[in-house]
Amino acid sequence: MKVRITTQNAPKPIGAYSQGVKAGNLVFASGQIPIDPSTGEMVVGGAREQTKRVIENLKMVLGAAGSSLDEVLKLTVFLADLDWFEEMNKVFSDYFSADPPAREVVEVARLPKGAGIEVSAIALSVGEK
Image (cartoon, rainbow, N blue to C red; front, side, top):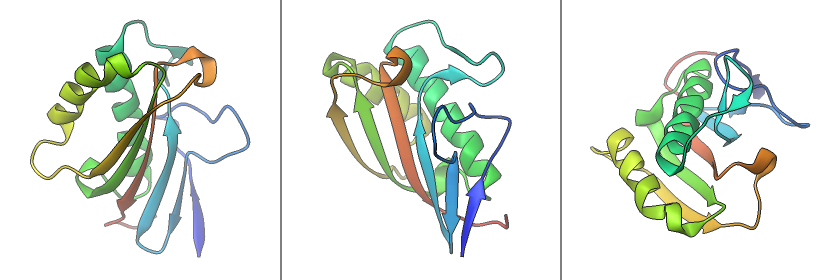
């Protein structure tokens, strides 16, 4: 059974998609860009600030699904500029130091709303939703 995940603590979708979907014990978190959910605006700053906001947004979606960053199996990272890789990786190391998930990083031509980064996640769900 598929369950749609929604939370006020992450940015509202800007298209025809859900913030996340839970199926069985898996959570599929849609790609998050660095929008501050309290303002609806992109965060100001570069790779570090945008990466932190994206991970915090993912954390909220996962939490709404009964999961957490500790349960992430795989991340997909889209960067508008691969020169952000080193700084992005430092931030990821702060959040995923003990048991990091699988991950790929891809440079893309453009991201929604001019974002520098977008990240989606697949995680285990350990709680009820």
